[in-house]
Length: 264
Ligand code: BTN
Image (cartoon, rainbow, N blue to C red; front, side, top):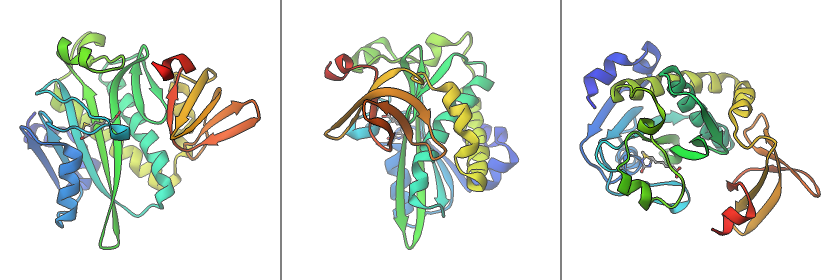
């Protein structure tokens, strides 16, 4: 991955948004690095990319295995003036942006899993971790994206859930600089639309891409477990579920296809 190549492939809008692009050979975590930079006063919008991560972070305290050049590991930092309850919609929006960008590059058959996993035939292709930071009255959002490109077989087996990578699902593998730029272009343009109209303009496309729409699922949210049928997301990005006692709106937690898979 090369900074000038990525820079050249960015749209005018993304170039205007990003003050800097940094590419590290190795780092603990691009999200952690982005947060350190914000806290040390380096607050301009930026993109932090690494060819490998030694302590990649996943959602819910999990780790994200990040061997050298086996995936794209990047964090987009943007200053935000949105209310904190906008976060959920933005995390769904990131997944949708990633899916659209990959589609543009010829990778099709992708589905979403609420809130923000990208799946190919129920196997996880990419994950997203949004982290919110505050410094001197301002808020910053770190959009962490991990996309599997060519995971070594041994690493695939180390991961305790079904995973896939671009190499296994695409006819040809686009240049990683092009993938990074296409994803950032799509994300920046969607964020701009989100800032104007919120999540509602994306609700329909999100639901169309949702693998679990109208399927029976189980949500585990801390100690709470909700069983029902997924009715898709509402205009804030909350997941609606038809349960035995009525429709519930879910704002956090993880989707499982069945109770059996939850206890695996
Ligand atoms: C998930 O658990 O699904 C989210 C995974 C997010 C991984 C990416 S890789 C780049 C960025 N830096 C991190 O430490 N995590 C995110």
